[in-house]
Image 1: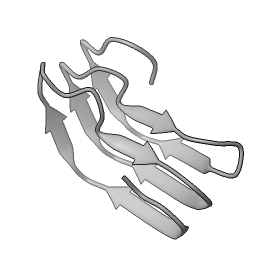
Image 2: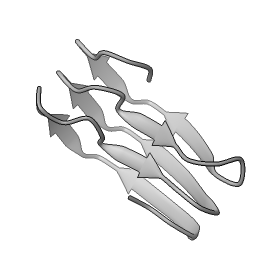
Image 3: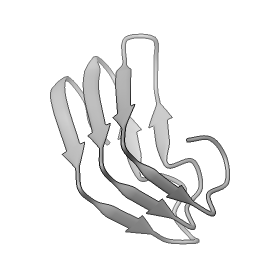
Image 4: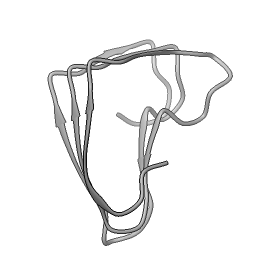
Length: 68
């Protein structure tokens, strides 16, 4: 979970059929999610609230459920 401020999530590999979150952006977070691989996960990137922003760039989504 990321709360508050500007954050850069870059060059990570997420793989888990049991995971329901990889990147969870919460209250007043401004996130750049870039060059990550999400494989066999549910809802790779989630937002909480209207005050949260996520920019996605160059990510690879393989066999995900939910939304990217």
